[in-house]
Every structure is written in C-alpha cells, then in structure tokens.
Length: 335
Image (tube, rainbow, N blue to C red; front, side):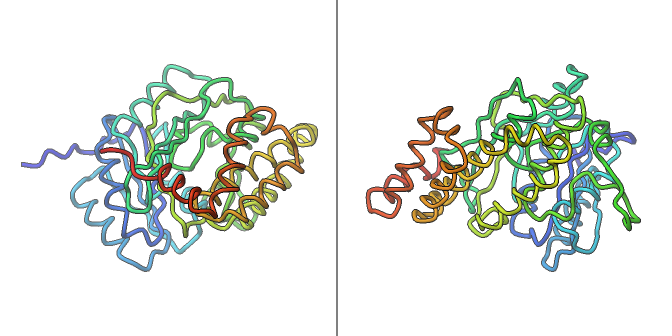
C-alpha cells in the first residue's frame, strides 16, 4: 500500500529545482524535498537541456510521487530554469533548491509559517550547513543576521547566502518580474543574461525597487554543497559578474551605490579570498585581500576578527601548518 500523499489541486508552496546534468545528486535532492513536513507541496523539476540521466531520474521519482512535476526545455542556464519553474508554479509561496543541494525536513513549513505570520515580508531565508562534494557535512556554516535586513546589508553581506535558501511570496516575485523584448514564453524574475551573480542581482533588485521586507528565521535549514568545479569556482569570472550586477542596478539608485559600493566590493573580494583559501590557493587569496583593502577598509573595521583570520589563513595555506589547519577546519562534522 502506497503512503505517498497526493498533490492537492491548489498547492500551498512550490519548490523549483533547476537541474542541468545533475544525475549524480538529483535523487538525493528530491528525497530531501519529498520529506518536507509542509502540507500542500509541489516540486517542479526544470530539466534545463540535460544530456545525462537527469530526465530519467526525474521521471522515476515522478512515478513514485505525484507531487513532482517536470518541465523540460532547451538549455537556458540557471536563471532561465528558475524562471521557467516560477512560470509553472501554482502556489502562493515559491522556494528554490538547486539540484545538488538539500533541505532539512521542516524548512518549507517554517518559511510558510513565517510568511503567513508576517504579511510585509516578501522573502524569507535561513542559514545553511555546508557539505562537501560527497555530501558529507562540513564544520562550516552560513549563519547570517536574520532581522534588520535593508538593501545595504543585502548588498554588502548577502545574508540569503545561496540560491537554495529563499522562499518568496509569489506577489513579491511578480513585483520584480519583467518581459524582455523578444521573450515570447514567460516573464523573467532572474536575469538570464547572467551566468553568475544572478542570485544577489535578484535579492538586491527586490530590496531596492519594492517595499517588501527581507527577513530570516532561525536554523541551518539548507544543506549547501561546495564544489571545486562549480560556477562559483572561477573567482575572476565571479567578480566580473558581480561588477556587472552593480553596473546594471546602479540606475535604480545612484546615490545608494555611490555610498555603499566600495565597502560591498571589499566584502565580495574578501568572500572570494575565503573561497580561494578553501581551495588551497593562497597566492590568489592574498591578491584578492589586497584588492579588498584597496577598495575599502570597512570589512577590517566592522569585522576585524573574520578579516584577520582570513589574512592569516591566506598566509599559511601554502605551508604545511596551514594545510593541516585547513584540513582540520573543513573535515566532515560528526554524524
């Protein structure tokens, strides 16, 4: 006898899963979403032109669970897959989980309760537990500030952290959607001309152009996979995309960007330096830290401990002691 819950006619929450050649991880991602305690869930897998077994895995899970729906399209990139998922979503609350990440069982229910209790909040987020390429939990986490989140904090510190964290109110997404010239199929919420920094571009556009509040809830409710070969790996390309995001959004509020861009740039460079340290690239980390300090001293003033730890790690990572400390800091957490 099957115990799978049947999808309601009008789901309460939709989770969009953009998937491109994600055969190695998609089944585990969907398993975590199928365990959500939230009633009235639909899961929308957007197969973004995969050439591996991603479509077959999605279809196999669909046969087991009618809450899973599949959208297939030619490759449009991560932003394009998310936009197609939004267009297909039927619920008032829409979340996103990349096909190599996972959700804690109570994540969606907690965000839905948060949004229902706070009608001015358009984006609900939480912290993330990091995991390595094998799926083992690491001794690292994203533990952001949860309240008092204005546009400046989004710009400088990106408390949402990654694209598998937020759950939106549908009307908030509709308020920042647009239809580019030549687009025949659906609106864009995420800018499909970006292959990196599409997340922060979306969050910051919401903060700058609407009255919706952005607020977090307690807990590390996303498991975010760190990969050495992913879109986040190439620091120069990632920073160039971030600068392009700044250039695109500056006309929304030139004074805001004139005031906050130097510090935000320094924080972004420090973040990239920390990623370089994690990959064992000490020389690159030190180069990025020099650029960060040249942009603004604000990270050093506002977060001296974190900034100094990053500098020490960048200095030592090429040495035996530094490598040993790095292995200790990034080893899997106890089960």
